[in-house]
Every structure is written in C-alpha cells, then in structure tokens.
Image (cartoon, rainbow, N blue to C red; front, side):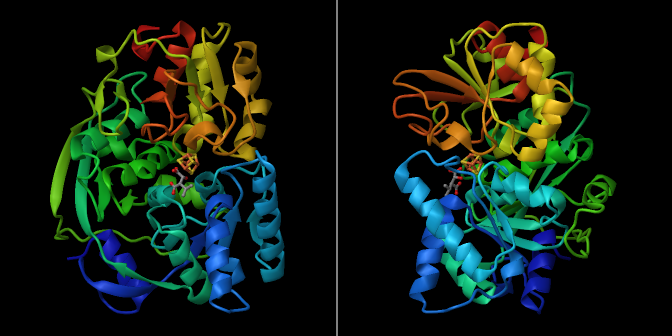
Length: 413
Ligand SMILES: CC(C)[C@H](C(=O)O)[C@@H](O)C(=O)O
Ligand code: SF4
C-alpha cells in the first residue's frame, strides 16, 4: 500500500520507508544551474574535498543569466566553467543550450522511478516522467556533490484527478492553473502530488511538464504523472540508463483528494501577485497589457510556440511580445518548421534559449506600473521588475492578448 513517492524513496534508501519518515536517500541525478552552482561549489570547496561523488551524475546547465548580463555574471560563469572542467563533469550545457528543466528531460536524465534533485525549485518538472523530481537549496546540493546522498522526509501524497476532454484553446496550463487555484498556494506544502484521470493522460509530454513544473506553486515537493506509453516513447533512445517504472498500489494512502472538471474548464489566468489568485479569463478580459512573454520552463516548448504561431500567423502584435524557446533544439525546430519566421513577421522578438526575463534578470524586465501577461509560473510582486504586474496564462491566452493589447479569451479570436 505505497504511493509512488514511498516506492521511489524505498528504492533510493535501500529499505522500505513510509510517508513522514526521515531517510538518507541516494540521488540518481543532481542538477545545479549558473545561478545556484556558484553557492553550491563555494560550499563544496569549504568541505575541503577534492572530487565530487560521481561526475556523470551531475548536470549543470547555464540558463538563468545567459548570455551573461553583467561583468559579475561573466566572472561567475567563468569560475564555474573552470570548476566543471577540473571535476571532469561531462554533462555541462553552456549558454544557449536552454533552461535546466528542459535540458534534463531532453537529454534523458528524467526517467520513471528515479530520484532527480535540482538546486532549483522547479525541479518538480521531472515528475512528468514518473521521477521524483525535487528542488533543494545550494548548500544541500553541495552535500549531494560530496556524497551523492541527502536526508529527506518522505512526503505524504495528495491525489489530483482531472477528467473530461478539454475544449479548443483550453490547454495544459489552464488545467495547471485550475489545480493550483483549487489546492491553494500552500495546500500541498511538503507533500507530493500524483496526477490521474483522462485529462492528464491525454496531455502530451510537453503538457505534463507544464503541470508537474508548477507543483511547487502549491507547495509540493513533487508532482508526479504515472508513466505510460507516451512517457516510454519519449524516452526511447534518449534515457541515459535503464529505468524501472513505479506505480502506486491500489490501496495507497492519500492525505487529500481533489477532482478537476476538465470538460467544463475555461481558459484560466493567475492575477497579480499570487499564483493561486486564479480566475476564468473572461473575468479579467479587457485588462490592458504592456508586454507579452511566451517562454520559460513552464511553457517555452515547441508545442507552446506552435500555439502562439497559430494565433499570430499573418497578423501583427499590438504590444511588445517576447518569445524565448526553452532550449536550443526547440529553437532549431521552430526555425526549421517556419514558426520562428511567423512569430518574427508578426512583430515578436525572439531571444536566446534560457530563463530570460522570468525572474527579472534581463531580456524583457518590465517598468513601474507595467503589466505583463506571461506563460511563466510565478507572478510574485517585483519578480519581473519592481513595480510590475504579472498575469500568468497559457500560450493561447498570451498570444490572443498579443494581438489585441489586452487580456483576451483565446476562444474569441
Ligand atoms: C534562481 C533559482 C534559485 C530560482 C528557483 O529555485 O526557482 C528560479 O529558477 C526561480 O524560478 O525563481
Ligand atoms: S524559466 Fe523561470 S521558473 Fe524556470 S528555472 Fe528559469 S527562472 Fe526559474
């Protein structure tokens, strides 16, 4: 009678463990990006150790401030590159390769049954592949660098079931925002979520990543979609090692259960300044926007750019619109199949794969009092610019809004 998380932690701990127990678990893959590796490496060096536990199991993508925005960033990048070379870490993804949470799955590091830990809160994205993906702080990461292990409290699990076929232009992001709005920003604190129902199984891998990505926005340690045929097909020829899919037992214990009505779901938006301040798009339709941002680890995948291109084809944007593919391969694909051209012709700006303005670093921060509709996962006060306001939506709602300059229901375009 175990949940997916209990089973993964039991394997990783070498003994059976249950929710609420503390356990020392072996990590399968560890990730730190340009933002957090700096602190993790500093703390690792303080331990006085020469070598990391296993260079092949460490993955470092540079994505947060790429290309370097200041001299300080350039210096930090330089130091980390040197450390990576010294340690012989083969899985290094430099400037332009993409956002960590896209780079790891694309390169087959997120696999069913694995414990994948990242020094970034959205590491829960790997749950889309049936992994226990979770975020830790940089000093915890230095401990993993040193020993390959970390103390965890095995989380209890909430069960979220979404049923019914989504209407046209109602997307994975709308399901995700509905889940966050229903569970609440702290509703799953220190808990894992397991996602069930035909609305979820119907989602593409890309859509499932959007959903798992935002588990942390309800406080979740992980957001896991049980692996199926789509998962295995995605991993074919991609997974970096063998894996064993893990499923919950029929009598697994859940601490709470939620039902989502996918069939009657409308496009959703999260209003400033909280992710669970969610409503149907018609309630805020007409709100003027100054900027549209389509990208991030939540919605910067090919499928998302395709949606945007469908709306913008042959049209012109009414406000500045920034599109940032989540990885180099997505950018290449978008160029090959004409999506990039469609977006550029419509007046959108295309930038280097990476986090971009998502957390206010560069490439599209907003000014005082400005409003941005964004496909990202966080709309906290000041995140994209001190006095800015962020609305979170699907790429369809964002693209529809780009055409009108105000928040627009994508079903009405
Ligand atoms: C910079 C990093 C630590 C941070 C995170 O952990 O989530 C960032 O990626 C974010 O989205 O706010
Ligand atoms: S895209 Fe945004 S949410 Fe994702 S890792 Fe980068 S900063 Fe964090």
